[in-house]
Image (tube, rainbow, N blue to C red):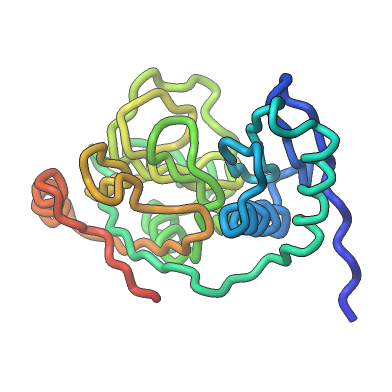
Length: 243
């Protein structure tokens, strides 16, 4: 018989939100519990909840305090969390192309030097990973992925860049990520993908969702350019391999 899961902490976030915290560190098991609770609320809404925001280790629950109190909502959330075991059923799996190194991955050689290996080894290890989308955040479509090979764990850059390209695939700390829009970053740039994880006027607007599985496949710069033009025109470059 499995041991009962420890209850999450309930933290007030202003006067109209509760943070349901499952862990104080980045943890896959905690993240699965976050997503399970989020799905449970979506399946059976609680009156007064206006929005839920899943993160790596907690679920932010916005609510209308006129409709429900902090204590009443907290009691229901704890009950849902206890009855919402994490599952992997129905996981979508995506295969995403990347061109590594060169102008598209300007930190690849420096990362290889820091980890005392070769750029080819970095590419091989990164492309071989089996990743999960733990959360979407920072900018629209920015996908934080867990599952990075421990060999590739590396501190973030001491000096963040103010601008990094759209489509950047990078690593930082124990994570890797898919950056959809151009923006600042302190992570190490390994390559780029033509895949648009976010397009405002596309249906669906967001391609990846928390809980999705992701793998990468290396492509050359010519293929990247061709796929990038197709993606800009609205074609789906990422391959949905399951379900």
